Image 1 (tube, rainbow, N blue to C red):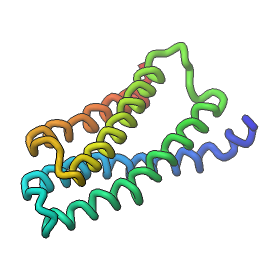
Image 2 (tube, rainbow, N blue to C red; image 1 turned 90 degrees about the horizontal axis):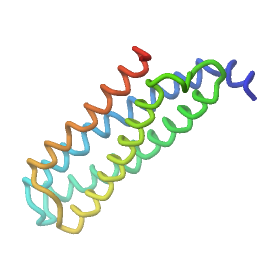
Image 3 (cartoon, rainbow, N blue to C red; image 1 turned 180 degrees about the horizontal axis):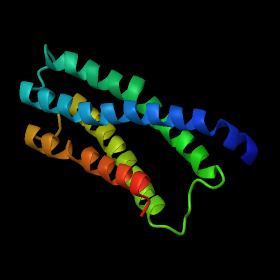
Length: 148
């Protein structure tokens, strides 16, 4: 198994990077859709109805599959011998940030359901929450590149 992972490593890593890019795009865009949604009202007519469709499809068709592929490929990369030295700090900071990113994804899914019920936060709150994936991405990238 470890020899197979080592052989497939560049392919798994490539798929992981593509999935992460798609996931991050959704994590950046969905809160922005929420801002437009709450600032246009919950009356069920255009543009709110269109925004609900966009939010749902972004989450179900792009973000969820991308997150799953990113996690599967990431775990396969971790299992590849010689890739991760768990005695260093960087894999732990990356793991913590990825778990936080996953929590944020689930929080967004809950917010989408709340908005569909006519509930939700203010546009200002969604704008502020939109900064979280940027911070987590910075932690992940610095962890992986610098390897402190």
